[in-house]
Length: 159
Image (cartoon, rainbow, N blue to C red; front, side, top):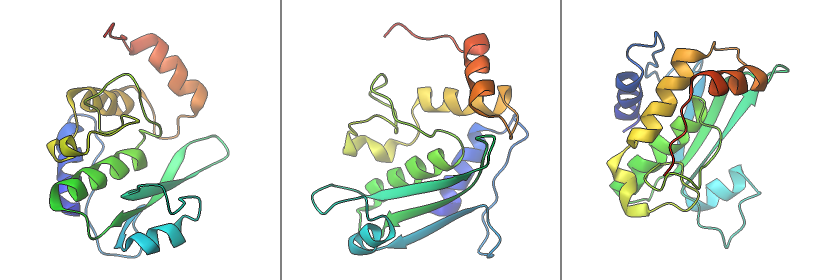
């Protein structure tokens, strides 16, 4: 599943010069762990028992606000489509989509997920954002560079 998600991101970003590779080595910049719901709540104590959570990602950001590594946790017992969507969602966070949206309902990053649609993968809007990030920004870009690139290159939709 993880190698498939890595392949999906690599297809989206194929013309950007960026590529992820799947490894089982201890030196990975992005680590993905599968475990129980209880382990997720131990891994991130901010998720309370009443909150429905399928996964979580946290990333390391340097003093210039540049993202440089991430750790992802996904609940192992999820049904396959939901697990696939959760892996893609958390992996998307780890490569630069650090927030959620109320604007695009089909996005894997919508604030109120339509859980059934998670297995569909990244929406066309998600793909556009990912390509934008890797075509118009340098890996060390901070918040000010991201904002400037959005103002220069991103065209907002009216829907």
